[in-house]
Length: 200
Image (cartoon, rainbow, N blue to C red; front, side):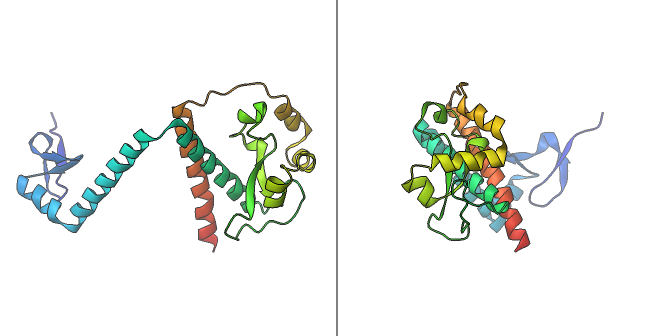
């Protein structure tokens, strides 16, 4: 029978798995190696990361459902803006060129069926229902729905627009669902942003 071994995180020597010291999933061949690692810059960095991770987990447990909803919506909206920036899309409602590079809220993630409406509430995280929109149309013209509909039909097709308008499937926004939405769209957004950085 082959005896399992693990490599010491400090001196890198292989030792039998049943005779090692463990600390935060790391293995050490002796108490001395463990202490040397803890005092090293690498060990200090690892300890700092563990503290930060524990702090994030504690804060996450204190968040309310409404806080998770806001964070999930923010992650989704950021992805929509990045997606449409990548495609160099104009405002869905008025066809105006959008300045994606300008900071301070030049571009909104506008919903066709508003989040306040009955159907819109259950479509707030649906990608067919949300597109880059200029601030004027989204905030000062109540979404400019007539222009939005024309732009949306042009972009996704008449059948999909009618599906949105006749949508009656309700989604349960559980805490786990909201956490998942935030995680998915944060990851998607990061991918697009990283591609932009690689090109520049």
